[in-house]
Amino acid sequence: MKKIFISSDHAGYKLKELIKLYLDKKKILFTDLGPENDTKVDYPDYAHNVANKVKINNNHVGILVCGTGTGMNITANKHKNIRAAQCFNLKSTKLSRLHNDANIITLGSRLLTKKNALNFVSVFLKTKFEGGRHSKRIKKI
Image 1: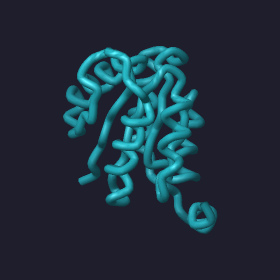
Image 2: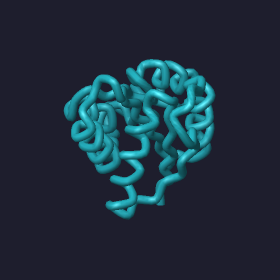
Image 3: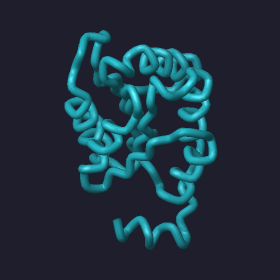
């Protein structure tokens, strides 16, 4: 069973909580790595924490939310074997899994509607890596 780790900064806190409700409703297990409220925090601390958990096992995935999704994305991608994808639409979300075997999705709470963010999470979790010609490219990262 894949483990899902979720975290945010203060700007992404409300969307993170909405995603947690969605996951609960779908009976998808996850671990919330904070924060516990919308008090200002530094996003790199939370991105590093999720990335460290995800890289332990190939089946682990992460969800990171900040204001734009960019800071979390940059930070997570500093880790070996992490392929974080900042997703803006359904196609970018699906292709990030199919072609890039992304293991963390980053979302911008200030840039996405709640509906779109939940759809992106759903697609990210359902889509499997295609492998094949993409596998050799992933090995070059």
